[in-house]
Image (tube, rainbow, N blue to C red; front, side, top):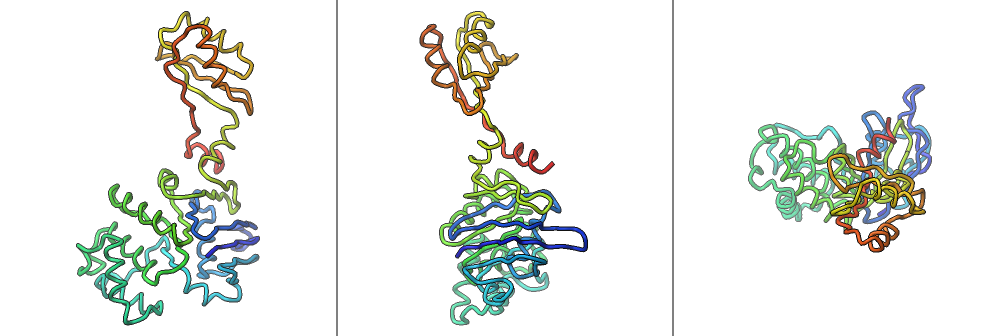
Length: 309
């Protein structure tokens, strides 16, 4: 089930928390929704889940409009908000049964579904405790279980790995990727490596507007603009001779020696050009040993910083 966001705006007085944004999330796609604090991520998620009405625009969920069909849409969405909606005085199993009942899950199948959720989210060791007695990581797991208890077609997860330890994060990432094969997932997080490990596509929002949309590879390519290579020529001759030979190649814009490594250079190709073949052929002609030629990729953190500061 897909999501289409059309010219969405949310105003708080004169401030536009979300400013005329449009995007689409296709069925079976896991989309990472990134942005600094106050960028409009949580507001957008609340509008998609029908928790909040937009000032302008619309969202279509499986062809249904949030303006006209909000009750039907809510049944199709599992939502883990930033503030985990838990009743601390309730035991884990009782809470999950309560949520399943609220969601209208068939009574004769609730116990089996709860058992599946406990296994899926790793709650078996803590399932008989009251929620208030759990660690932050286990409370987050209960929040994930409540979001998935009614087997929704769409999952909206706002910071789903908050409070989890590294092992738990790996488990939840794996779970989200598995869920993404069948469900549509929008995932908000500040942990950028998590986005690359989990998501098919990345949306970056800043000051209420979408500033980037694409895979991590596409965003790197757009940001980088030109090829950057790290090259090491083993048993290199005089450094100046190597630099002179490299600069003479038609595709190379700049050559910078790496000071702490003899025979190593950072090479910038000209815009929309690649120098790899030319460098290899030059080394063959001059009988130089090419020990390394590695593309240097722009980090997602750098792209995020450039787009949001």
